[in-house]
Length: 381
Length: 78
Image (cartoon, rainbow over all chains, first blue to last red):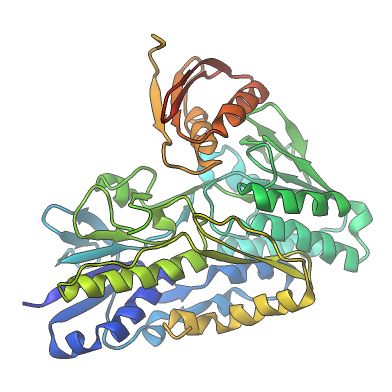
């Protein structure tokens, strides 16, 4: 009897896991005792961290795209199709393209985040973002023409992908505009939903003095309620109104509807045991990356580490051994502090982050990792 | 114990700071004026976060029930 492992989602978590299993379960795959299937709704793997650099003209969206069939081991069956139903009782998925179904013995959900700008009236018309390919290129076109006025960066949705990226954007914009002699003509304002500039208090305490030093205005307790694209204003639930000439936001995020419809969790995030990553509401279901509601950042490093844990646990289960691997909350992020300097943080459930002093070396480490990321996606790094 | 009947409950127990406050803000965002949201949180930080935000946003913190392993906050949307 062949055991079927099905992974839904070909982002960082899904791709790393597929390649991890191809390596870890090679004997079982060769013998036909195990099948690993990766289902993705498009043919490409997308590495989203590239988008931060697109508005500044330093990267192209194509730099963050590779064909999944080039990245994923041949031992993995790759299906380009959209899952339209998850039935955890009968352990079966329905696919859209050919209206077929796929049964599973072990399911891993790695479906990631989607942007939901329509939650905020006026946002889609008035705001720009760098959390999508189209958003990043449209923002690039605006930013290249932007020479004076109010640049507002508003963090609207949390949790959102890459919690460091809003800070990175304003630090980079500040430096980029200074280098071009435009900073005195541009006011930069950063807004955040709670009483500090980042969800993690240690990172917030580190970032706030840098923002003051760089003359970046801060509005805390700012939860965007609406955007008026004609008047060029953004208004918060707390009653603050800001004028903007260029509005950049982190739009509201959500998971995919299928997860809530399957009863696995709210807002598209799967309720999981934060150590084993097993779904709480169904048997034989794991979630990883943004999809797993663990409380840690929605970051590629998290998906990467979690994929290793799920790979080990699945291999143990396939071999009828107790699954002992657990996720300890490990998160690793580089944080750009300008166009040629970056910091670095590493933390887990027990140990808080302590941002490293910004340096050029860390900036180049970040860029070097972004290039070598493709080895991570292949399961090699 | 309060006899306030909430219109909705946000169970943020187990979520690390600032998860509970963000969860509350998210629920208030979609609520109607006058709705009462009950937030369950086992993070002590919520005891300062939640009153600070409700005051800032003009909503009313009707009551806080402090329990042994978690607290319950009742917030009325303005």
